[in-house]
Image 1: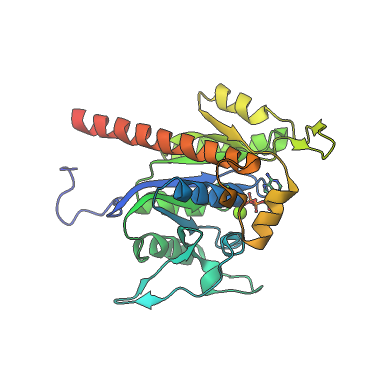
Image 2: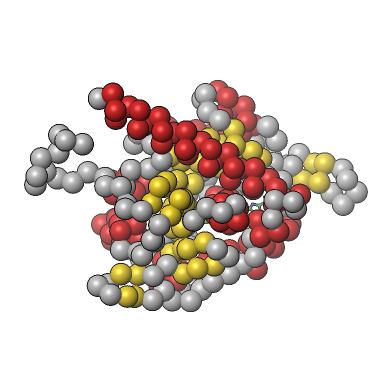
Length: 277
Ligand SMILES: Nc1ncnc2c1ncn2[C@@H]1O[C@H](COP(=O)(O)OP(=O)(O)O)[C@@H](O)[C@H]1O
Ligand SMILES: [Mg+2]
C-alpha cells in the first residue's frame, strides 16, 4: 500500500495475527444469524482453527447466552480487554460488560467506538478466524467494521421464505456497496423432520440456494429447523459441540468447512490482485 503517505488518514488496517475476519449478516432478524455464527465458531474451533467471535449486536447481544458464558472480561495492561473463552472460542460481547435486561441507549459514534474497541482493544492473539455476529438490518455496524479492518468476506443467513430473502437481498446489496465479498449464503430453519420421520417444509426450503444462484454466489449449506438447536442456544451448549458425526451438528461443520475453504480462496485471490497492481 505504498500510496499512503505518512500522516495520511488511516484506512482499514489489518489486525496483526488475525488471518480472516468474516461477518455473519442477514437483513432480517430472527433468522438465526447468532445461532449460525456461534455454531460456525464452535465447529471451526473443533476443526482445529483458532477462532474469535465478536458479538456486534450491541442492542441484542445474545452470544453470551448461546455460548453459556457471562463472566466479565478482565482488563489487562494498558486498558486491553481479555476475551472470554467458551467451548474453545474466544469472544467479546457488550452483554458481558453491561449484563441484565437494561437496554443500552447510545448514539451512533458510541456504537462505532465499541466496534473499534472490540476489534482493536481486545487481546485476540493469533486467530485463523475472527467471526463477527452482526445485528439485523443493513447499517451502522457494518460501516464501522469496514472502516476499521479489511474483511475477508461475509456470510448471509436467510430462511427460504420470500420475506426473509427480500431482506437478505438488501444485505447482499449492502455488502456489495461497501465492497465486502460475500463468501456465500446459508439457509437456516430449512426443513423440519417430525419424530414420525415426516419432513415439513416450514419456510420454503431451497429458496436461499436459488437466491444464491441468482446472485452468482456459493451456497454454503442448509440447517434444519430443530428444537435441539434452539435448546442448545438457550442452554449455552451449541449443538456443534456434539461434533461432525452428530447428524444435526454435521450441517454446521459442512458450513464451517466451506467457509474455511472459501475464505482461503478469497484471500489468495485478493493477494494476486495486489501483486498485479
Ligand atoms: N435451525 C434452528 N432450529 C431451531 N431453532 C433455531 C434454529 N436457528 C435459530 N433458532 C432459534 O431461533 C431464535 C432466533 O435465532 P437467532 O440466532 O437469535 O437469530 P438472529 O440472530 O438472526 O436474530 C433463537 O431462539 C434460536 O435458538
Ligand atoms: Mg442475533
